[in-house]
Length: 268
Length: 288
Image (cartoon, rainbow over all chains, first blue to last red):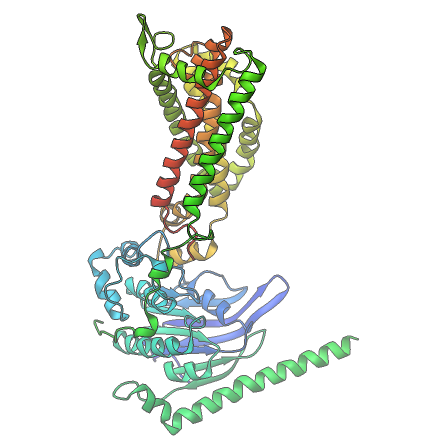
């Protein structure tokens, strides 16, 4: 199991964390350490607490019990991590460029880097367009560029491609992989898709159905450079990893359904 | 850090062209039909008015359209040494009233937006102020005009106070509701980018509230318009409301109707201008 680099401060340290919404325990207990530079993918069924864990790491929620540290300190929204949501959440009163400019301004950076950031996510000549005049895939690219603007050590992505069609999703996965390899920043990516997890991750963590607990923590040792996406997907190791993670997700889902059935039967 | 990824493919081409006809649920060619229908309605209204005026035969009760037209000419020119109505041309009466409405509305809108933002962001202030705003909104302007006369005399000040106070509540209520209901998703997006509380209000909450604020402004200007006659009840000449009140005292129905037309038509023009400004300032309205 991967662990923090010896002696160094881990990028993320989640220790004995549980989180509840009222009486409902959504997550935990969970222990998770993410070293700098890792691309960790969280996989699990709907409602298993993946997004909750991401919000705890982003600092939008405080854990009911346990501690979350990013870079050795409790997280504060907008300080240590760039965040990409499932929906692009662009500001419609700003142009595409205006959205990026705002992010640069908040980060205290010069605002002349808009075009460079758009280039980095594969967008050209759209800076002056209105956000609703570009496609959903382009909007999500803008949202990624906006999250990269602050140049923060962490990048958190909450199912950013879930609402996109399969073709666009695949292209964005490839582009995100390139950006991630180039920047080398620590990333956490939440997804339902086992294939997406294996393709993007340098480590995959599978959560059980609610309350989410870690049931599989798997390092992915696949080449990230010098190989085309199609060749990567064609590797036997790729298929083996997909199968292993897929089994973990399915087995946990089956166990949870069985537990739920037993519980409802015994309650009658 | 400067690696460039491939350009997005054709599958992600923009959808801007599809927005050209936004907001149009009416069938094509509807504009010409609408204009024709409105012209027809005007002709029918004119005919009915003419018939009603001749049938009653009492110009003090219903003057003919011709008599009102005659008053339009009389009040817009100098004739037999008399300038317009009460020494002022119709356009001057209207101009003074519009100036009062403009100043009153601007003060009311500025106060309403400020109050609305405060009410929408600070819950205890909303709890304290909301009933007061609703209270003032329920009062007819004439009810508090007497108070302003006592406090400020009969010159411009009480009129501007009346219009400002009348215009404030619609804007305050609309702004507070929109600010309070600011979408969590966009607020979180701004916070995730590192925005401070003040930046979130300036860059997200206020722009997001603009459509509702504009609706509030249009209502406020309408309220100020309907209050101007009340504001010009006392010492209102020059002023279109003062002219109407003065003509009413002397049973000059044709001048009263002329004044009503002037108020109504200028109101339509101002509303059209506001709608144009709204479309230009809030192009994202109705866009996903």
